[in-house]
Image (cartoon, rainbow, N blue to C red):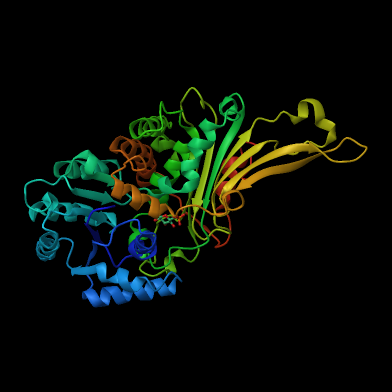
Length: 480
Ligand code: BG6
């Protein structure tokens, strides 16, 4: 970013700002990814002054060991505007501040408007951006320098997502809208396309003739922490299922794009998400498992009778010629035994054809893409054990980012911000991608609402309810 800009962050006292945006912005500043003239204005309800906002940011960075001396110069670019998201007064005050910035530079500096609040505030914020004309940029009836960044979850279901999109497109052109899913910014997710399509060896095997099934595990050790207010109104399916999981599914299942450019990549992502076979309302309890960890209802800001899920497992199919008939098993949850996000492609067994009596393992070849931690790729193979007798053993070939590149790569939010500055929308959702994923997810939500919404309580530190095991085991398979 080589020109002055202002980034207005709605929800600037929340978890996302503190743990993701602030560290990422500060890191980019340290790496001189933008020039000295910038302004970050936090907008939230808390009655902070600029000084208090700066102090709070410094304290937080200290608490997560990311405070460095250069914060002292960075912090002078932080400003705060107190306001209610649904009340135009705060917005009007904000406009005054923005005008001061513009005047200082004698030009309309670029405005980034970042919605980092819980999603139920989005409509109110957009309404006030319209009413106060804040969305119009610096008043020349020309908002081409303004960009709006919207965090997931984008809506609550299909209808609200469509409504939100309409509102957005009244105020902004598509090229100004950045719908964030930070999983698209993860190094390992981006690598999926390179890995699949740059290496000639995997692509011929990446289809129903060679794959038995695909499984994805998205497990987090932490619970919902202090995010009860946000999470309880959302639930795990909307929080990570409708977005992050969809991106992992798209990365593993999409076709090769014609070229590695924005429209072609987004087209292929959209096509594959559209091809996920819907789980009809009446079948939801057969294909989807809902769980809640035991202590969930004792978390801060969670009602004692909450029926919100913190775990989901599901089985579904993708109707593309490449993958038709191959089951996908996906599980995601909080308070699980380990932090793991990985995709495994389990290949059809062939060992037994020749080697049945020499110790074939239960599953043969598995290609595992580890999204995090220990980012890398592992291929499970069968080899002959050294010795005079013929006996087999499972071995593994692996590469990790740490070993190969001596770095884990760039933090997802740094990549997301760099792309926003550059105006590159490749790693952001297009509205048709979102619509297809909401179509799939909304059917499940409706199945829960109108039929069976059985919620099984699971012990913290386990792999979720036993129904999640049954879901895969009744097909003669198992979670890896
Ligand atoms: C967020 C969800 O989008 O992603 C959180 O709201 C989740 O509930 C987080 O913990 C996971 O992201 P990461 O980058 O920590 O894997």
